[in-house]
Image (tube, rainbow, N blue to C red; front, side, top):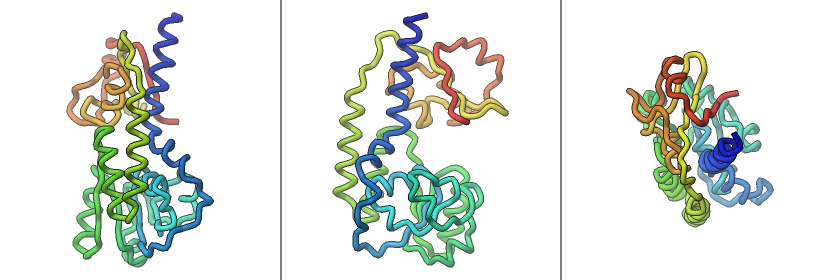
Length: 231
């Protein structure tokens, strides 16, 4: 039991590092720093991209966000343009943004609608830790924060290189949601974090990156570690 507790603690630390890499970056850029002189007007429709922009000390460029974008705290002061799944297209257009940042999956439709209205839309959907780092660099170029992006990527890469993979790799079941039960496969960002952390994803291969799974299969798999990602 003691050995299991050690594995759980070790893996949890690694996963926390993976999921909150951006939080580490944000902590390096105090909210109280003066705004730069850029005139870019950005609308961000997805939380992870909003965090990246803030981590690059560019929160002052963000004009509006969806209501799920609530970290860091400065995002709560921004104009809201609906939710992640149903953003308010008319309100977005009325704000006349220079750039709109969206994610993948259900926001693909939003991207297409905005593109038809001659809005500059950029889509980011990193599904690995490495692609997340590349995304930071791409966003840095788009908002004229290349030096900040390069510095953040190097800092995060250094943190990743410090991870010590455990000799006895625990099996991991990551629960995305409970009703219905949903998990993350090896092809998802979560799956890559588990792999880089030294864990073995219990459901590495399923039909989609984030997929339903029967409770009976979870019980039969009997994972060493269970991680719950929702409240």
